[in-house]
Length: 197
Image (cartoon, rainbow, N blue to C red; front, side, top):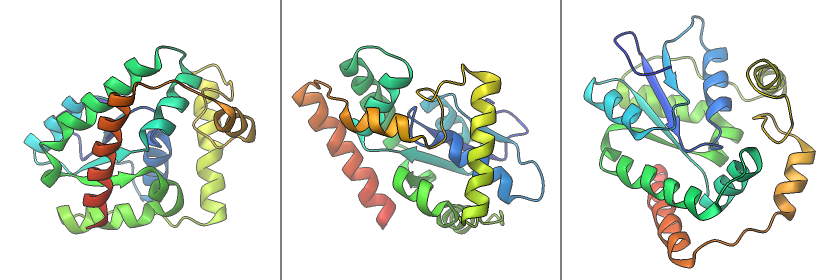
C-alpha cells in the first residue's frame, strides 16, 4: 500500500529487512485494521509519511545479510543491490529525526519495543506486540500463507523462518565491492547508533 490520505503508519525498509514480519506482527497486535503503507521499499514512502506528519518506522538490517537474502530471493548483481541499499538509507538519513529506526534483530526478537518507541515519539497508542511463542507462530503462519498466496511458495522467497534458507544463507559467499561495503556498513552503524539512543 502506498502513502495516501487514509494512511496512519508507514513501515518501510530495504527488501529482506523483516518488512513482512513487522507489518503482520503490528497488525496482529491491534484491535482494528490500521492503514499501514508498506512494502514499496522506497524512500519516497518515508518522505511522504514525514511530510504528512504520519508516524514512520524505518527497518534496517546488516547490509551483507540483507543483500544475501535479497539475492537468494531474486538473483541479481550483488554490488547493484548493495548500491541500492546505500542509496535507500543515505536518502532516508536526511529525515532521521522524523522516524523510528527498527533494527532487524529487534524486529525479530522484541518488536513490541519498537511499537512502544512509535507510541512515545508520535503520541500514538498502538497495542504492543507480545513476542511470545504463540504470537510468533501466528505471525509465521500468516507469513507462509502470504508467500503461498502472493508468491511462489518457495522457501527462498518466504519471509517466514526456514532452516533450509538459513543453511543456504550461512553457506553463501558473495563478492562485494570493498568501498561499497565500507559505505554500507558506515551507514548501518549510524542507524544502529541512533536507534540505541
